[in-house]
Image (cartoon, rainbow, N blue to C red; front, side, top):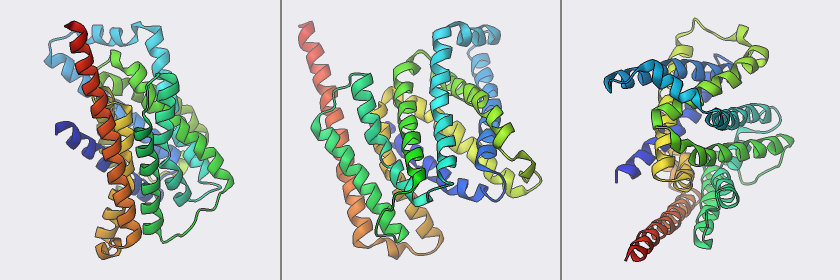
Length: 316
C-alpha cells in the first residue's frame, strides 16, 4: 500500500510539472527554466546529502570520494543524465514544429517503449498480457487527451519525429536507472543525476537559453521556478530512484498513464468544469487506463510470486 501511495504522489507531482511549466513560459525560455531547476536542485540536494551523512556520523569528504571513485559508475550516470537532458531538449526543439497536444499524445508511448527496451537490453521477459496492458494504457491515455482537448484526430508534424526520439531517450533513462542505479541509494543517485544533468545543461543554456530575457525580478518566476525545482525535480527524482529500485521500471512507467487524467482533473477543477469530464470519451479512457494497470500489475505480481515459490522449491 505504501508503494502504491508513493506511485500516486509521483504521478501527481509529474502532472503538476506539466501545468506549472506552462506558466513558466512567460518568465523564461524552457531551456533556461530547465537549467535553473537542475542547478538549484543540485544545491539543495548537496545540502540534504551532507546533512544525512552528518546525521549518520559519516565522514563527508570520504562519502563524496566514494561517489566518484568508480569510473564506470561516473560513465553510467553521464549517460543516465544525458538521456534525461536530451529528452527535454528534444521536447523544446520539437515544439517549434509540432503542437503540445501531439507531444502529449506521443508521450503516452514512453511506457510501451520502455517495455521493449527492458526486454531487449535487460532481458526482462514481458508476457503478452503485460504488453497488452501497456498497449491498452497508451490507447486510454490518448483517448483522455483527445476527449479533454476537444480534438477528434491526430495530424503528424515534422517535429513529431524529433519528439518520438526524445520519448525513446526518456524511456531509456528510466530503464538505465534500473540497470545501473542499484549501487547508490535514492539520495545519492538523485544527486548524481542532478550533478551530471547540470553539467550537460550549463553550456546548452549559455548558448541557447536566452538568459538575457529571463525575468529574474518577477515574483512569478521564483514562485513557479522554486515549485518546479523542489517538488517536480527534487522530490520526483528521489521518488523515481526509490520506485525504480523497489517497484521496477515497468510499474513506474505504467503509472505514468494516469498523468493525463490528473492534468485533466486539475484543469477542470480550476475552471469549474468538472461536469465536462463525464462524457463517453473521458470515461472510456479512464476505464482503459484502469484495465491496463490491472493487467500490468497483475502480471508483475504473478511473476514475483513465481520467483518466490520457485526459489523456495529449489532450496527444498
